[in-house]
Image 1: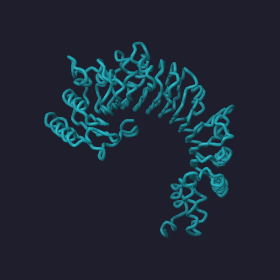
Image 2: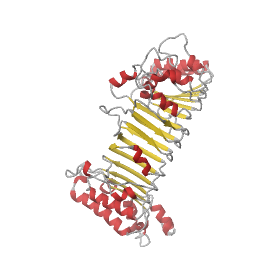
Image 3: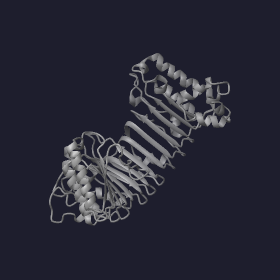
Image 4: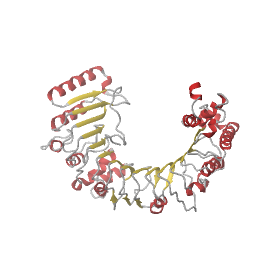
Length: 472
């Protein structure tokens, strides 16, 4: 501790900035040299769980909540009007909204640039629709990053919001009514990173337009009872990263993403009626416009629902001439009808990741799998140049082993295959005789093909593909 105490104040302040505020404040008891140092820390990380401890019912006591309010008020009072860079507040124990807004106003007046709010108001006399975040937050000239986690996003009515410095906006609320995106996004002229979760469009025709956005994540609720939007357009020419989860729209009139590098598409099918509509001709066929808008992409991940939806546009599927890495999620209730044409339209594909081999069998699976015997068996695979195949959620069934052999036979350029055992839930490999048989078959596959086949257990699974590293 003596060596740390002898460091310059600015270095010790930097060290304290990585600690929760309560822990930083406790250092004042170390010595006179530390007594007031924590007050100069430009980052405040206030978490009521750190203060109240995870004791059941403790946060429901009025005196405990008041002691937390007094602590935060005291911290801000001691810091006075000193500049602040980051303010992170986690407050889910029913503190009154007026206290939270008072704290937000304090740090805004002190020029905070990074604001993170995780709040939950549970007062009986406060209706969610009655709560508004401080008006000052919507006209801040210093905010660069804003993250809101709340059961309601705290909408401010009648405020002409303009945040000229904001580059990152992340809103995850119980329900976000986005309103007219045409008037929403222009209020953030330098916005680069936008994430909206648990949202529902207010309008049936939506346009997301921004020349500055580089990263866009949209996570619709997809709850049963919500209506599919009529049209969704994206005019985002600078976008590099796209993570899109929503009910499939009837039309995608404009998709301008010419510089897109990596994307995950999850077009949600919630009800059996929606699945029937997808499996009926002339329903949601305009989804091909979305594919045409992202056809220059290099890394793409598709969910099982999306793969089912893509079966509607097999005849007009674009060629993904730059795609090097493709990830597919599979479920037993969703079909692979789009897989053959998708693989044929990826002429430079190098890595294929399949999360789950079991899927809904139809006569349109083609030769991408070994479900149904066909005369042109293996045709789509033989034209696919994939070199690396990773199979995740392997359960150890003979049906999966048959499909693995099918891939080994028909992928002509395959060099490496990694088979990752399912981490959660029972698998056939829990039976010793099955496990032994699987191991024998793996050895046979290695001997009979030029591909290196690896079976990886749950303890040594290959690292998860991430959006920033490999794929979403």
